[in-house]
Image (cartoon, rainbow, N blue to C red; front, side, top):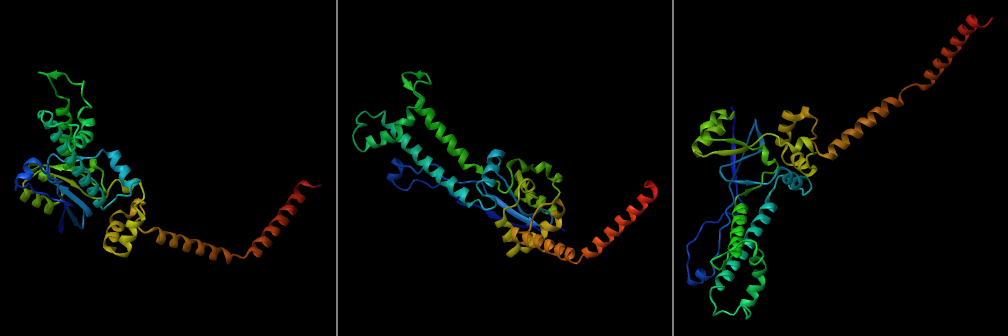
Amino acid sequence: MTMIEFSNYLISTSTSESVKNYLEIFFPKGINFNPPLLTFYKDNIEGYYNFFITQKNAVFLPNWLSEIIQIFGNQHINITTLRTIQEWTFGFLNKFRILCEIRAALWWWLMFNPYQQPFNTLRILTEWYLTALTGIFPIIIGIDIGPTVAITALGVLLDLLNRLVFTMPYLPSEGEKFSIASLEQLDNPALADLMTKIGEDVIVFRYLPSLWYKYPIPDSLRQYWYNKKPEILEYFLKNYGNLGIDFLPDGILQAEYENRINNVNLITSHIDFDNILTNLIVSIDQFTEVYNKIFVV
């Protein structure tokens, strides 16, 4: 029987709020940062780092970029740093989009001199971006649609950031998609029962991550298993110990290797080299005697 434990993971959840005062009418907060919810689970079959997401329009990194971040960026299990960068980038671009919208609106109000403060600062901060597409798109009814396209592009980028999912320690392509109609294909009854209750399509990441076949598992993670989570280490050794993957920390493996070397040296030191040399000399003498009898007249 499969026993499953679930836990939800979400760095930041923001809900939409209504406008509370007149200041927020002229200085809106913009889009709320509300990334997809990751639900982690563990059981005695699929392991300890499994999770699933229910957002249908989730956005994933390319496999090659996710691999670079995990291997060279040392972001394997804990994605808190990545989520923080994602949220900070989202907040920065969101504020920049608001400034661009205010600057674009001021183009229609000729009573505001864009070269006087504080409008000049606003112009310097935003006009380089708003006018970047000027001349690329045709002017319609005397209106340059370049700034509109630029602001729209910011909105699209914000939407992608808001739906971006980090799949560490898995690659995005390892996700298995299951719809409500295809849950009978899911080989985990407890998980299938939960999906039925949720009533949404899911993408499941489970079993041993493919990068752990291709690259060594980070030693810090193996030390964590060995010192604090022996049940995780026991699971991997039991289910994947025959694959030639090092699940033990480097220090333990090095000590085991040195112990084997010492045992070999100890056995070698007990060999009687004097007897070996004597037997070798006797064998050579016997060969010489036979040779002389046959070939020497």
